[in-house]
Image 1 (cartoon, rainbow, N blue to C red):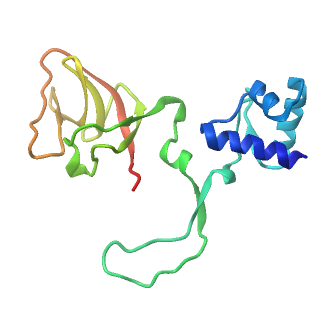
Image 2: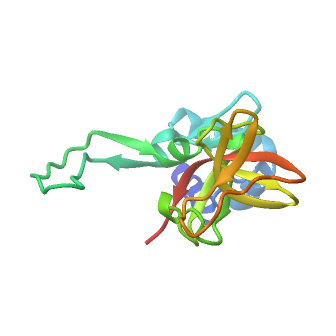
Length: 188
């Protein structure tokens, strides 16, 4: 019976891209009490299906969200390909190591095209109010928001696009770094 409950919880996760709460698990399983859900969660933790933190928040166990890492592929001259299971990669942890401070934005425009960031891509950003010279940032500049390279020369700060058709942006009224870009996602 536990496999049925496990499948229902994993199906919920696949559909909503989040773990269900206790009330939602009660609905999924038909349980009448949160205590029964608590016992089920502990059993799934013991089986290695779920993890539970000190606050009671549940997540999928690491191996449930991982994708096999089979090796390397040449992007230069062709070489013999070898396929061995080297490891697995948890894409959530790889792309979003600080989930509590991160969010995703869809890219509009082509000012970062030479950096390989195209319109329609998604950028994973981490909320920060400071950046290092050369990092790609989301910044509020003169009342608008944009994504560019953060540049600093002496006391002068400016934003540099990655497209020769665009000019550097020098703030005249206001400037604040909102986030730093940590990754780009593109689906083919």
